[in-house]
Amino acid sequence: MTRLSADVLGLYKRRLRSLSQVRYVFPFAMNTRQGQLNYHLVFASQHPLGLEKMKEAMKAVDQTGVYSFSDDSIGQGQLFDFSAPADWADKMQAALGGSWRPYAEFRDYALNETPFINPKGMLKHLKTLGKLQVHWIAAPAKTGFPEEKIRSILIDR
Image 1: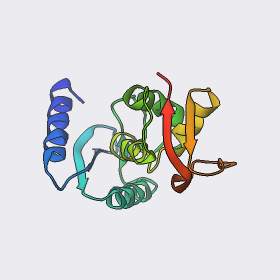
Image 2: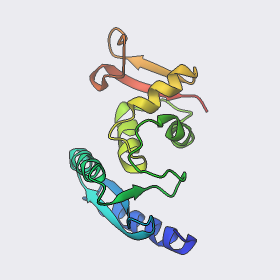
Image 3: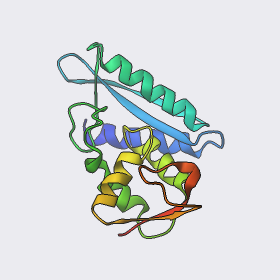
């Protein structure tokens, strides 16, 4: 993707998010079989479930081999490479680290800025590095990050 097309895509995403009914925006880079960018499919929704379902659908299409989805921001070959949450955890730390935040902000970040449907893999990675604190509503969860048990999360800067 050229710098100009990246800037245009960024502007388009910002304009969509400026609409009062749009909270979730995610671009899917649609490549030809030869790996060249063909176009971007930009999905926008007012509800997180809409984007979750869209990501699930795009992941299913990706598995057919008809299109490959790429992400130009970190140079991955496939957008839906769920084996690499560490690649995205640093970006989430830079964007949301330094103050206590509700789980919903991490969920929204994961939906809008990463190929993931939720932030759990990235949070797990940061926890293993000792960069994450969780303020639990009740007893801490033994595994994972159940949203209903989390009051807030702090990622160290």
